[in-house]
Length: 167
Image (cartoon, rainbow, N blue to C red; front, side, top):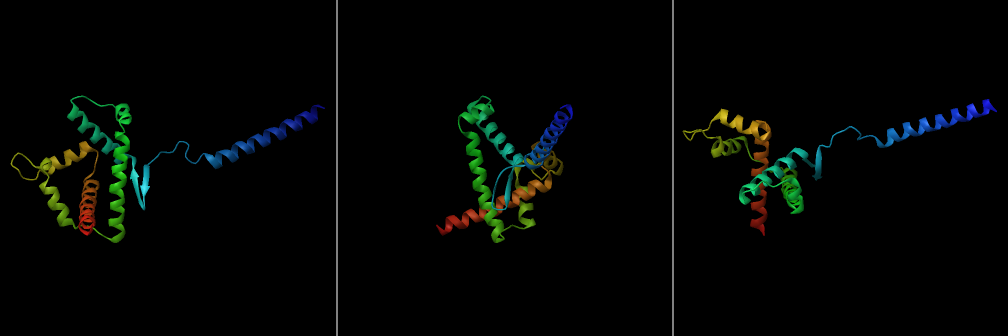
């Protein structure tokens, strides 16, 4: 009887072990992993960083407007988080379409835009390379990320103008 019970327990443990291994292999692909995007439009993913940055900018802008700091919970109550996400989805759709048809702007145009941004100008009104790096560092962006974003903004603007002109 003891042998029979011991064999029965061994079979139960083997089945449980196989079940655990099977479930771990099937459903644990994202355990301990990180989420990198909040969604996608076409081929373009919307990064968590982009969403967080734009939500933070919106909260800062509204906080300044109302003269009080808005919390994330308040933003969610007013639907600000969803409005920001919708805006990002719309702009990403335009970016995706611009990329799909091969619409882009050249390095010269991007450079002109960077030089004309007042936040990157020194006290003499000229472009300040160190101020540029410092401002981007504070915003959590590298120069290449910022310039690629600016390139997409310019291409998206061209796309919007073409669509509104056709309408």
